[in-house]
Length: 348
Length: 281
Image (tube, each protein chain N blue to C red):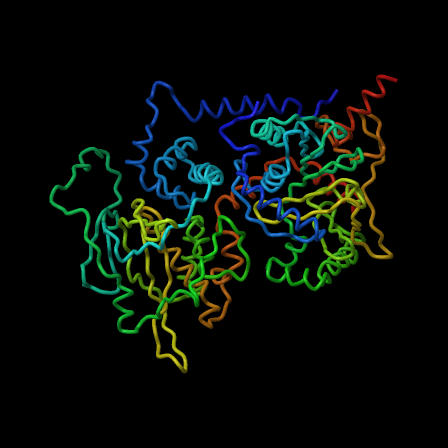
């Protein structure tokens, strides 16, 4: 007698036991500590915090270990946990001009107030596998690590009126919160930037890259990339003044793009913007390119390329939505397949 | 035993209230897709997060929960969702359709007719019936507002012109109370007639797409058709090999590699109920 897929419960328990075993590996090898992951896999931790939309390196490290290093799975764990947290309030906007900097570069000016600060970057290294990694970890005692706040490059351009001003929308309304309200189209720039900030890095990279290859070219220059610590302030209602509740590491990219002019306005450069937790330059730069591409309609440009189409970009940027729906094809579909089978037989 | 590390039903009370408001609106406008602030659940998108959020928001301590996938209680994802609610709510669970007050389903409506007071929660992958024809949501929203469903009628007409019949076999579009075009979720069209004038409350949750819609009890639900091409459901030439039912949806099982196959009920509760009644007789 045929018994259809019985014993699902026991099979799931067995699969979970196998997973736990595979995750741990050889028990003779010590388990990774969360501190090791935070310290030595910091960029992985940063990515999990970004797409997981929680600034908590400890939880991100925990998620990474539990997910065996699978980024999307770690992001998933963090987001599911995040959904259970109450929303206590909203912090005041952070001011990246007051960032204490580890790194700040501009590709548009050779020198500028504050100078170019390379900081901890692998940009100018030769990507050779280093078989003696311990020796290369000798700290350089000489170099100064953090730098005091420096003016933003776009503000220097802005003082001359050469770049479009970026003012809050009339009335300075509270931005929407995509973790509380669903995205609706057309989406405001605030909603788009939120979506991109938690968007999949690989997806944004490919979309940004496509704009450099003729699909919505925008003549970008990396006006400035900065990475450092900013203070986060909350204004408690009963106090009425801001209180610093902590510091977070951020990467910001200000892209300076193709200029625009009109009958009423002299030609000006336009902007694309990227912001992410931790040290996430690739993500920020890609985000800035996509942000600029998505402004096509607002700037009166033809909307023809995928990166310019809001619904295309914003509906497909989330790694969890994409991963879940692609992989749901693993679930049984035999009822639907039976319906198709019956139809194909009838049509033959 | 309820896991007290999490709130009853996993979601916090404010989130449940937001979802219940969306459900109330959906019930007030049958077939209309209500956007809601879908949360990340501990299951992947596409695996029932919408249904799980709806169930989590309406479930109470005295509910009796049944979860099915492909009509069966013992498929892996149904088992997983049932154990999720057993863990986060501690409610009683059942495999019997008649005992359940709340049924979460993927891809089927139980064969046993539902009764007043029961709630059927559908897991919905794609809430927009016209998404495959027009991917831009701003456009489909406008079509719903104007009740402009020509696009779908043309699609069905082209099917008939090309294949001699409508080639949609599951997620077959329905018209609700003569107003809103609605995706019934990927149930086989065999199940569509069960939605019409059902005494149960039917709730549809799409987590990834962040939409909820509903059919209040006794709502008119008509599958799209043409006068000269009436709507028809699947029929099998043989009965269920296990219980002999001729009125149920059958799954095809391959029994060997020489073309051997048998057909059995997809609804495992319906099939086993019939068999135990036969044995008792």
